[in-house]
Length: 286
Image 1 (cartoon, rainbow, N blue to C red):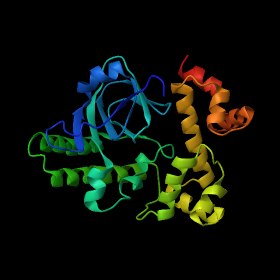
Image 2: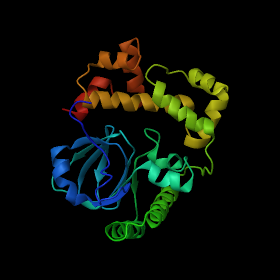
Image 3: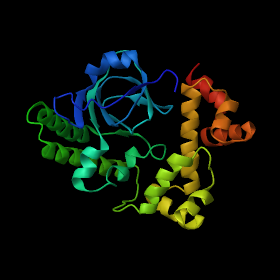
Image 4: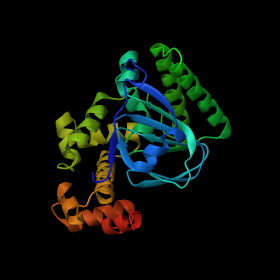
């Protein structure tokens, strides 16, 4: 995307390889001022303790304030719109740091807040919740700065993610999911590979050797939305990224996303967002 910096995980920041870090948000001011629009190749949870402004994730705008949490998965486009620099704590990690250790390749994928374009990437904690979560982060920070015990850091990361997931699912009234059907994971992976050229639920059902109706049931159980809506959300997310962070025209974006008729793309985008693609671009980038 034009004008977007990409940040990779600094794995040897503390000497030997370490795939988790806890950063004070205010220490990132020079990077945020230089590259307010950027994406990360790792998972990020930003907890605001003080400040104001706006934070955008894939074009979706959120207000910054004390107790706010923002979740971003790899390759999502983030943008800070701030006056003075907010204070906060930023927990970052690579997926392999925790999944390989617990022998659960599904763990991070089961976390509702890291499901790109399907759930709200923003959570507001109460004062008591904020104090509890901040205490875990401080423990992580202290361990990183002292012993760097990977076993303890993984346990603390697991505690923080599991606790946040419970708080998130409770707030948004999402059903509990203990085990994700492998076909749901395969569907998500197939969508990432083919959503630009294949917009039909039938295509993905065929790839997974199930009926479209059964695929819908599986996706609804996990994400509370249909497989068709999951696809639509993914297309809209990509369309927003291209509208905000590329110079492509609306017609070019329609072709990139395999809408042979730009007018159909415009109608579909308006139905999902309430704005035409051009109006959305002008509204976000006046």
